[in-house]
Length: 503
Image (tube, helix red, strand yellow):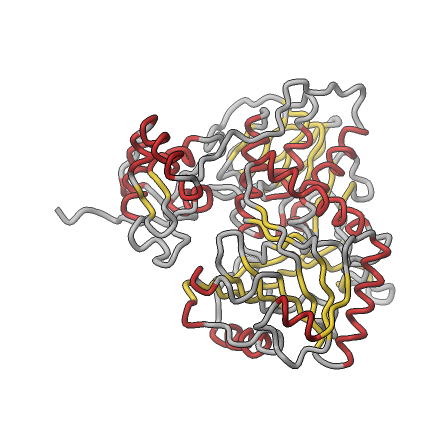
């Protein structure tokens, strides 16, 4: 992993812009071949934007329009998701889901989803009546008429899934450059020159996985044909004490055909409630608002009753990249935006830009489809090459990740005998040990901030939200990285925790 290294650089085969979950999987799949790949990320850590703040659902594939690219991708990805998570040592639970109907309109919508899902090849779907639904989920609104049960729906830790993909890509030879913001793109003599605030990179092929900023990167080389509209969604996180309120992902059958507000379990045993939906101008505005949080409560009570909001331990907002198409008004010549009717991913070369590839508009079910998108995009790039060689040394498996809290007492005792750092609990809420924190720091693409440790080791995710463990994590980061406490950041660049010493 490289932070700030300027000067002469080699010519890369492929540069991937953006180290979120899709960028990570694109890089990983490319490295199944003997290629020199650079992964550029503007932030001081990977998976810090769209990837880390979403509903974390592994969708089944019944929502996508039959024949759309994302329809086939979602079904294949869902069926293969457990295998990918086993390779990458990522927690995944196949919880199943219920889409519930309150009233006649909801019934129509459910039958539409059932028909669409069958066309897409989703397995195991069935209609449940009121009594069958309430037997599965007693806290669903008793006014329910009917539900669509889909057993293949699941939940995953979204940032761990993305981190694991990036880490595995680096394990297999990708060069990761953090704090590297792309400022310009130019094609000369068949090569792309990628200008950044960390120097200039050169490659034969460029893959744009810039998430919320994919439109801006694309317009550096192509005529505008899409715009990314940021849509903010806000959420409540409930403590594990409320974790048995629902056991499955609960959707509402909605008139506007969006997934709407959801109640879902998480892989950590919490309950997630949300999101709201609000289109913005500012792509970095991830603030939460009282108005929207109150709206979530009012909407969600139509599907699930008695949610114990007194167990809320956190609220947050995520921003998803909603794609709009751009066209020219024939009368005025002005560029105008309109919403994406097909609602498909934007994948491939824009017109007139050979060897530059967009991976854009990756909203739901983008997390589900990340590996499929990576495979698809790697295929497009490889098809442009002459006689690419397979990488016989490619290893799809991430090094073993210890989850001390999930082990038996005998296994824990054995670990402590091997490494005494497993005997020191750093995060009491989640029972994360010092050894796990150190491992999170020193893996490829490892943590360099307090929240970086949280996303990799699970510290600070419990009831106290880091109130007890932050000080100890600061000390471990300082010791391991050889940096003074004053230089350790909480998350983004400049978010220092310690400003100075009193004594």
